[in-house]
Image (cartoon, rainbow, N blue to C red):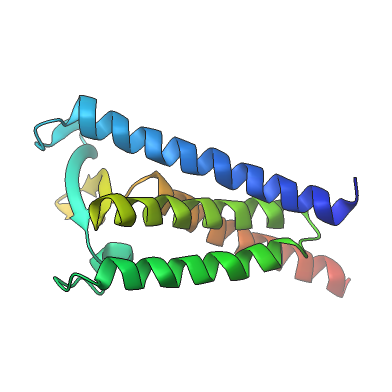
Length: 162
């Protein structure tokens, strides 16, 4: 199998695994851990909560406008298409995995918008009265994918300059 095709398959397979894990984690939390919508304290720094995010990351651009989920989903799908095109040109496994993580996370959140009109966030990290905005596995995949792309870019640029 040609290298480019193998990188595409690696990225897409990873995105599929993340989509399934994201949706299963949401079902598990929604139906079994927090069925009444009340929060649950897990550790001194980690809670499970129910947050319906109608915006994008950290609740930015939240609107009560009924078309917002569809506009945000269309934007996410357009970005996924561009990332898939980038994935066809990936030269390194880390690049393919990072792009797959971002694609999988974006699609996981689009599924929520299509099903519920909002993204189901449930992980609440906090310390000394400070709370990180609630997030989910898809959000984590997107964030870690971006970090991995940055690391990959920095390592690759440093190696190519030598």
